[in-house]
Length: 227
Image 1 (cartoon, rainbow, N blue to C red):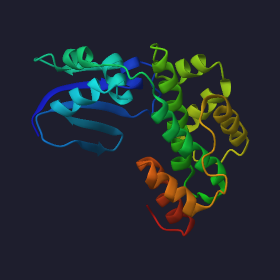
Image 2 (image 1 turned 30 degrees about the vertical axis):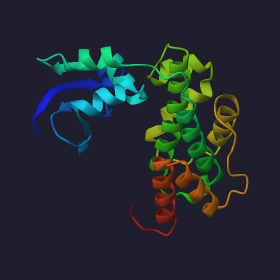
Image 3 (image 1 turned 180 degrees about the horizontal axis):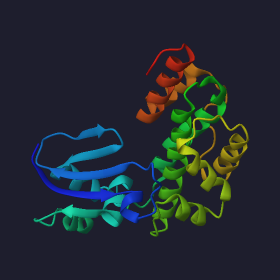
């Protein structure tokens, strides 16, 4: 897998990391397909050059993160400059907000059915971050860190929900924080019945991959199986 350029992104690129923060890397490759390489606490997203540019042109939020906050480690051919120059904001990020809101409502309504609360808390943090990043991108002033997102939202509860991502505890009081956050920033609950089959149909119809994976994890963990 020849790597054309490599950059650090996330908390370690911003210098606001914690001692146990992951090392997040983004590689531009000349491969045909996307790959994610995980080794201990090192995560490397490997994007074919054409895919990275395509995502930039379409206003992808993850590529926006790379365009604005990545710190190149090597890039002799100017790949990251080209990604930045290719980025076009979407007029609306409602689709991203809807997908993240749907998952957040599912987590809220099924919180006590999970056993792996590191997984649960990370999913909640992902939902909150995605919604706020999308809202900030719509205003053309995107932010990404937990502190910046908390300040953008004017909500200490949002900061707490994001910061709890590595906790292995079920913090019942945070469910009220999540409900309040969704009422203020998210989309309405799409599955009033709360039935798992209805959630599965909703996630399938909207192609909510993160939602389907989370539903699968909950079903597995509730039966004591590893995921």
